[in-house]
Length: 275
Image 1 (tube, rainbow, N blue to C red):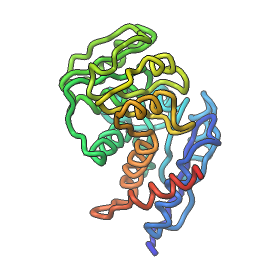
Image 2: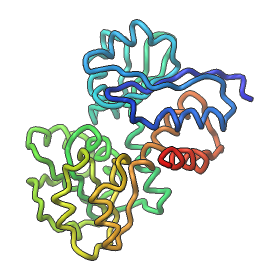
Image 3: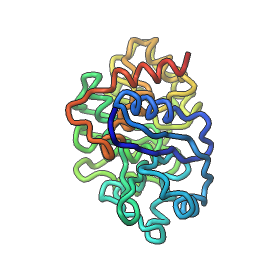
């Protein structure tokens, strides 16, 4: 048993569906860490007050929607130090308590890369991102180092500038939303849209596909696009893998894991949560 005690939580709204308590709670058990990890409802506009009134009880906090962008707006008043990555992608999913205030970063991108690496992928010639919101920005920032070209298909041009700013090397191509798009033109398709938003795209997936689909959703699962992709012979990675590896990266910030490998045990815990 470790002599370290950690208290943490995931904040967002709605939050009842979150599997983060399963993931982090199991990690604490595996590592022999005393403490707790809980899910707490914090609605839009409530993060600053939560940090002021209850924040000091926690060593780190995981943030989900709608707080990933809100944290940037309250950084000065809440003594939050935003790192370069989070500034670039305009999204934060992790707050770690410092002696005074908080440090903020995002592990969504690093978790995405590690999920790909675990499946045997480390480079892509052509990538399509479906959607242009907060998760898409995290994915874009991560793909900058492993993709030769990236296209983004979103429903609003208003988000184009924000996602373009996530890249330092790649010059992204923006495509108007097209339900008839031929996904076979890409060796990686990343779906970051809400549940059901890409269903018409899914309906038009060819009967045979060869590339990789990474769907950031994990509940409900499988999504229509994941099912159609798999039926066509393509490889699919679910959002459960992203949840797994971004969570491990969060834990590593407060409890350095070194060479300790815990993803197998945590993956089993997440899979059992669906049964």
